[in-house]
Length: 530
Image 1 (tube, rainbow, N blue to C red):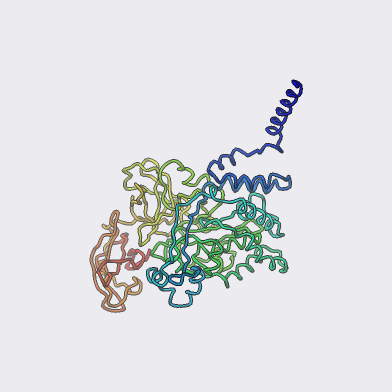
Image 2: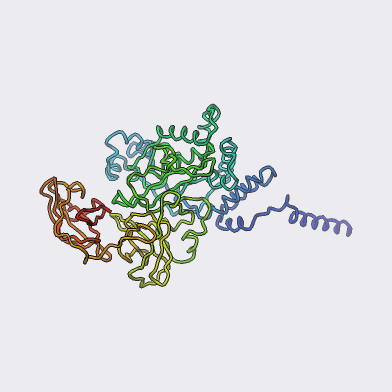
């Protein structure tokens, strides 16, 4: 009996050591993956199930590496959970709000205000909950489907040239930016299968053109979606809607192109430096050709051109690239536990690529003041809703800042971010080169007693009343008002060189002033829109 007990104990010891030392029994998780899994909470089992799925067979070792890449860079990916009420008012029948707006583009419903829309469909509503990290919500099914279909796309003849690192960044990601998590790879790959099997095309760009041309007939720019559906959409919802904003179009196009083995990235400018007075930005795609050169294009509207994207007269202050991998030099990573960071700069997954698009300049600025001893200053471009941040720079000696790789010819404003607010900290300026810039705000320079300005140039018409404002330290200061008597000219008086002005139109109902155009200056008896 004693020998039998000892033998049993020995077998238990052998079993214990085998399960903890042999790789087949023990689940080895790399340290960086284990660190990321700490954010998964109750969802850890879902992610571990995906790891076990690829850990069973040596031939899946590269897929396991791809999964580890996703997991270790997933901690900064969040999405809002949106609940949508799809009941059709009193009829209480199922109502697809996305298909509704697709049809509404063809008639007067498109111009409705949200209050009027809810009068028609009282039950239409949505609730947006706090965002949750992908690590806490993603499923085994999503991970396995995404990886398996991404590897199938990588196996296309025009994609095999990609390195594993390029594959991970340009084909593998399951999301474009902040859209909700969803299963899209299998569905889109299934729709594309007939094309991919019948078309005798071997060049990457030719496939891109074919797919992008087909998307042009399927998806359209749909600005009204901002009014009625003010949240991120899934690829399937964009499909139902038939289009969306530029962000929506880049997202849905990237899904199709990645499914076909076309490596693409999402580039954007946070705000234009000219043209629009409301501070809009823009998003588009860039694809990587066989020579590892990126070519940008507006998905669903234009194909890549050899001489970069067509921006017309709109100046670029900055261009950034969304990446799946964290960027160690991003401000969000540098200040992960430090100072507050404004707007899009709070993302650790953006890369400055401005110099891939345009000639850039470095702009050196001496701040007027820095009373709170901030570590960083920001450059903003004009917007009717306040100066909009496009870049940041480190402050040295409390007031000196250099902003690198900026677009030239753009009107900028130095800013500080104090207690959650952007505060002007210098005078408006334009960078012309690394050593040349125009600084505005000196009202002692040459004076123009009278200047005739075409009405159309300042977006006015006969019968309008307007106010003339000048930028003074940290606000637009009212100078005087007037009325437009003809459709030809208005006369502006007492203007100074190197001052920044703006004309606001008076609201005919309450007399308040509203932005209708960009700022301007006066030089050589000519009004120059900035």
